[in-house]
Image (cartoon, rainbow, N blue to C red):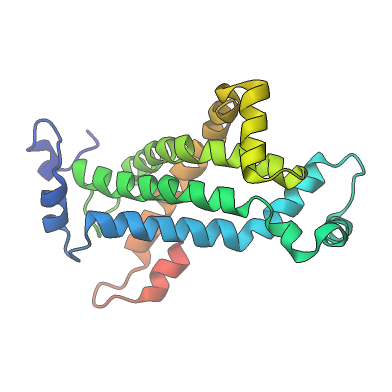
Length: 216
């Protein structure tokens, strides 16, 4: 009941990559979606990484330091680079994670017959949630190592070896269930809101880029 008439005509709801690319009005290729998603992920995570480091220390610290005291303490330890410890891990992890997220979402939109310019509140949210499952499967191990590097003094390779040696590979995915429990409702709301705000806010006569920025 959630599929468009166009999608219902295809009994198996299948989609071929070449057909998908050819059906896009902007002729935006599958590979370009992967690349754009990866770059968006890197910019997002690396741009906000210093704040993530501060947040991690504030949550884990027994000293109950505030924001500014936490910043001063971290800077005193190793300077500005201290705020980016572990950024290489999350950057490498978000490349496949975000590539998978955006391509899964775009292909799923085509597969389920979601048309641009029309509202699909429930289906948009469901597809966003599904894409998040794949995204978190790639990013969770990187996030585990990233947090341990933020709180410790080990290098990337040392941290990975120590974690696997002492806790096994399962340690890299131990937080996956709770991560998806948090991210699925978030993705449902934000994707559904983003897609449908664009429909209602976009002028019919002409495209205005600021509409997409506002929706995001």
